[in-house]
Length: 342
Ligand SMILES: Cc1cc2nc3c(=O)[nH]c(=O)nc-3n(C[C@H](O)[C@H](O)[C@H](O)COP(=O)(O)O)c2cc1C
Ligand code: SF4
Image (spheres, rainbow, N blue to C red):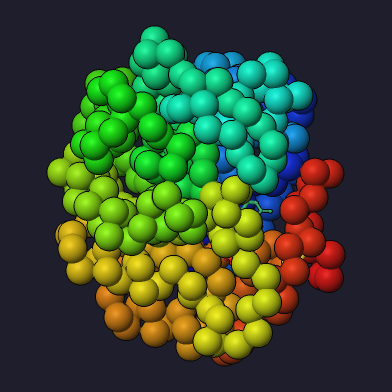
């Protein structure tokens, strides 16, 4: 890595209806890589059509998508950046009109926010998901990505398995923490088989779900220890799920006191394990980013600030003190991400 800045996964809302990536996305990566980001994590790509969560989301559910990704990888590498594929399944946060009408979840727990009543997954579907994540990783390796990141945060399917709120199963896939983790250990082992031992597997993990019956930091520390044993390459610490309201990409970041809202959780996780820890969420000033690094965080991830200023890292190097992003969330735009204020 040429520095400590990661572009956190940011769904670009720019793929075509089938899920192919294209030059519009390539242009974003060109700007990020050409202006100093050390590593770009792609927007979440769905591993199965029934896990499609959003409009214009990119897919990694078939070999036919590999060639498009090869072009994205070449663009990032030409600019001197690493690039990592984020692989995801939306679970109960998949949109019914996009995922075939039948969102699934470890248990049939309705989402109070979206009103979706998901269907409980059958065991063979869980095994298919494990296989699809491994196939996605293998496709990522074939496309030239430097690593794959499993999206196990923000209330998507893997996060639903980890969370006691959405996983109330009584079979081997639910109940104890070991059982709730089983799908991830299965994926880690399957990726090794399909993509090789030397292809790094990263994970984006919730420190906390912000739901009374959900994950707490004390749980995520235990999960992080399991991830270390399973051979994860790096953990990016985030938090929240749709049902919890706006906890992931928060608004109202007025000053340093509001920044880095998952930093203390990330530091607790860092203390417990030896794998590299990244943290995302509300970093805006060079001073807070430096503080996180000084305290032992390995890399700091940014999403919205790099939508507004794709050349922010270069500007930080030149002495800029604070990102211009005002955290208004106007960039969640189904027509394609762009800053409302740039
Ligand atoms: C438009 C938009 C799209 C996002 N898409 C993803 C995604 O695909 N995968 C993911 O893990 N997080 C996604 N996020 C969350 C960000 O990665 C990040 O965790 C969050 O925005 C907080 O970081 P920030 O304050 O630097 O923006 C998205 C955020 C935004 C604003
Ligand atoms: S619309 Fe612009 S200012 Fe608002 S959160 Fe997105 S990038 Fe930041």
